[in-house]
Length: 374
Ligand code: TRP
Image (cartoon, rainbow, N blue to C red; front, side, top):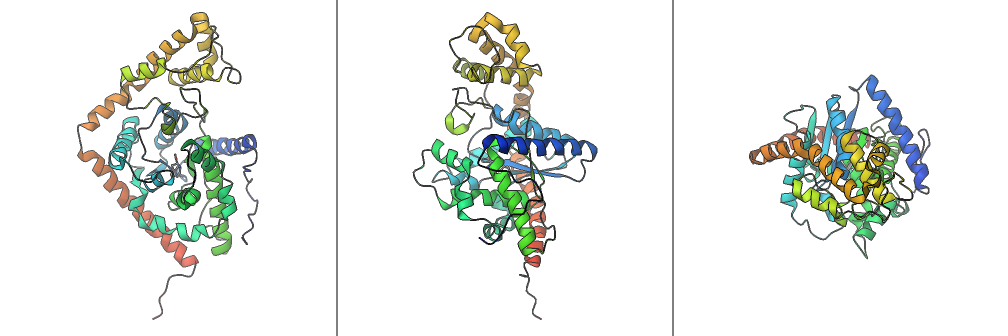
């Protein structure tokens, strides 16, 4: 590897989780401040794998920020990362259903290109020019950098993979293409995506240095972190995640929501207190309650007090159902219009391709790979 990263922006180390997070959070906070001054010069990109329904961890960790940015008038690109589904499994599974459900999830929370003209939703498999960026980008990253990525290690473990494929190892490069093709600088994501974001920043920096004679072809993207970057699962495990079956999905019914919360893990102490270190499960439920009511977790803990885990769960189920009601209603209305999904995708593919063609043109130009020998 000949490229030396240079440190004009603070590098985010992967060796210390908390240091990584503190630095990323500081950067994220700074950007939120700048946004308030002038939103028009920014573009957002973020996205999801179509592997199953979105859940409230996605909502509070990322969707809420996307909605906020959309409302601020920021141009928003949302990638449905369909190729990325193949990182940790051998087949695409129910991809048709999952892509459809994802679009319904987006639209039901308010991410709808026909209500907000600044929003583009697309599948990355439909944008050949985006995928072509992967090749030059892959020259800018070493194998050992990829092997050190903690999120990939965790994902491989969660899926019990003995062997990881080249696609799994290199997906942070694909993800950099997702982000950089449209010059997305703002990337609302959860904490687990920070190592990938850091690699995208390196790729942008190294591309400019190595191939563009320091011209700023790509800008370094910034992770925008939510106030509560990671929601734990209802089983008490570290992360709410589809693959761990510990979620409350946005498309669940009221009854299913109540049932899922009833099964949530708590502890044996009756008195409810907010103590994330010593009582992670109870505190996670209080955090969720706080997020859907806009009240502090401490004040909920005081109110519930010796009502115990039962009352905490009842309160949460009740308020979450109130919170999710308008989302569910919008979904029902859109489900009765099957053409809607196709219209969203056609619109998104058209817009994303236009941008990707321009970016690939610039990349080929600075790499001296446009040939016209006449
Ligand atoms: N890796 C992300 C996830 O698993 C999905 C994703 C793909 C993404 N491309 C992206 C997120 C670009 C942010 C930016 O949730």
